[in-house]
Length: 138
Image (tube, rainbow, N blue to C red; front, side, top):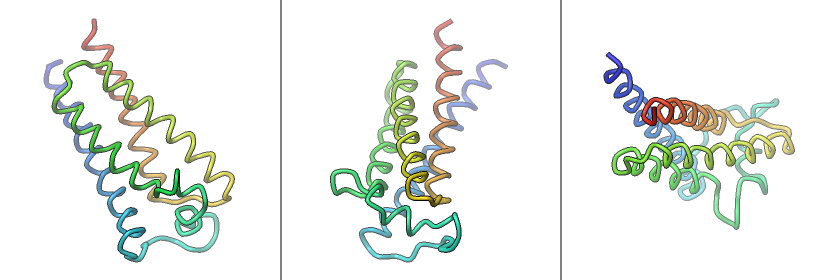
């Protein structure tokens, strides 16, 4: 029973990573291809303000591009790296990104619902990876 639960959690991490990758690709496509963003543009929820702000870029690269790299690395680690600490470490780095982006949204005064979905995914990945680490290193 415990083995099934651990496999289910690993599967959940794969699904979450794919969802994060899809959102990141969508936001990157906005930057690269100019596809429209389907989100609110009035009030506190305003993706355009967040994504197009100076905080929406790091070293001139859209933040979404970093998200693509993060989730591809996440999937690589999930499939090919057996060390459970590697997953915790990677998702700890992801949490650092979430903290930066929450700070940036606070400074901008707007929230991006797509960004928020990636924040939630990243936090869930960290929680699951810590749980799995504890179970696998007993």
